[in-house]
Length: 88
Image (cartoon, rainbow, N blue to C red):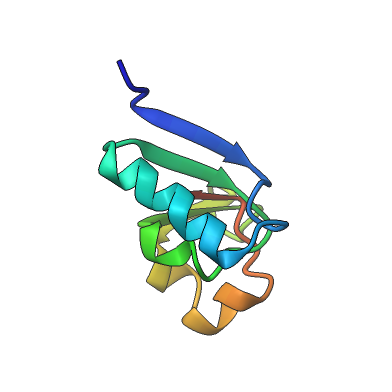
């Protein structure tokens, strides 16, 4: 059986957009959830991401979780969004 999820640890920064899209399209076609740990959000991966978990936030818990668009602005997708974990 296929895995239900995969964890990608800092593997998107050195990969081209076409490869990123192809990988996430394969995951989507096989109904595999991806959890990506990253310092920056690759713009090609962003359409496949649903939520962003940010660590080290100025909140009582020290973290925040929310939809990608709410936590990271679209302008931040090509720069340093500060994201620690993004889940698709």
